[in-house]
Image (cartoon, rainbow, N blue to C red):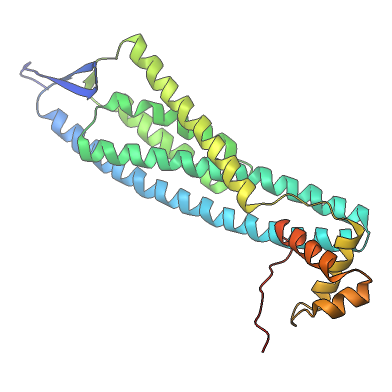
Length: 266
């Protein structure tokens, strides 16, 4: 662009940090509008990836529930080898679920950052850490949701290419600020892993160990699951006391195998 005049703006993106942005003429306005449009497109893509991960998580949860039930059935039937197969598959499903939840949380952080950039007009340098986060998530989900992984690669390239092509000059922050941005990315990743582990632990229970009495009671309950359980009859048929039966039922409920609903006697 001819003319040679410049506007110099000082933006404060966070306390104690000053970044000078040098803009050269009207071309910068076009650049910023182009960047806004690309960010909006990236947000749309990002929302799509988050929904794909949601669908994958629901799929894993349903499969885990099925395998969990089959594993318990095998344990009750004393088919240890079949139980081990299902337990092994459940362990793999839980690993994938952790990756999915972790990725969802990181992508949510990225989405929020992009929305802030649009709403608050933050400078381009604050976009760069997102590329690192996107690449990390893309690598993690490559074998779990390949399509989403490729779309994230495209999203990261879109952001990086625009920063490279843009005529807007952003003075790099001091090395300490760069370290803070790196620390922020690491914090997001580590916090997402912690929360993911807690969520998966809550929704994907471990395979419980069962005593012989618990196996017998569970088998009896499952064979009569569409009927009300007569505690006296159950105790009599299994040869255990009603008090012991109630304790076993309580343990089975704590292990997530049955749900007890106490009905009123008419």
